[in-house]
Length: 393
Image (cartoon, rainbow, N blue to C red; front, top):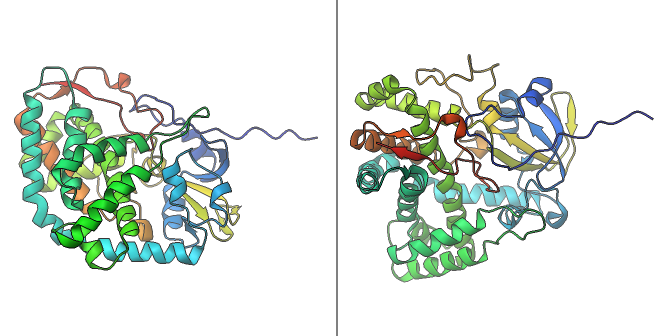
């Protein structure tokens, strides 16, 4: 009887931030292959740029599964499971409607109008950070507070509720391991439901107000706003932290970018492409059979799109492992693509550019205090970014 080799096993363990992904060998073997997830289920891992981009455009892939309770899982997270819809048409309509409702709030023109406020927040928080005792954790004391301040204002979270919202958000970002139950999103959704109700009588210029004035039910408005906060927080904060670590090794590129907005834009794109070596996976399900790269993904199968591996695919990016802010074109997939393109992409780019400008203008000698190879990712988090970044200046 022929021996069937065990499937490669994915994990969410802590690893060196800038170490090449241990899954590179899988990308070299095949663009789409079977793996076992951190939750113990089987899935298809998509590792190359062309196939990842093609599937991001394929409407047969989405958040739908006929049996959400028993669907194969990427990780043990009530938040991720909650996003699975049991009907494909319903899931597509919900996705379309949520983008239609939220899209105007994130239009490129509106984001440019917000830029002075984002820049002001970056300068203010950088000033506070510069007054801390050294060394200080840039991730925990600048990147996260800065990202949160922007998102809270955009969504419409009042100042007196921001600390509570932040703690609830941190709780549900954890992944359950070894039988431990991961926290559910219920308390955060309840908070956002109360905030949405308050907007009906005291509207503002924010996402929650836009949702309730469009007659979106309170429960749905709360879920959309909370999901927006969860999606935007740690991803932007992680790229700020990764960018600071990378830029400390490329001072000449940084100096150029601080004097030239076009160079800063290129630098931001390369941080987005090159910053994450692993831990950037988008889980989706096939609603119908999909033939791709010589394999057939069956309806109901879990598909994992690995953006980090796709962004380091040397079939698309020359010297993919090199940090090159002058890289053009730079078709990275950090914001997804097609129907799954991130609504907050314009805002994230502005946040990154203003963060780097504020930090390195206020603290020109800003640098990590530990070698790059000792910087570690967070274990057991939905977003596989850095755990911390101790710095001096």
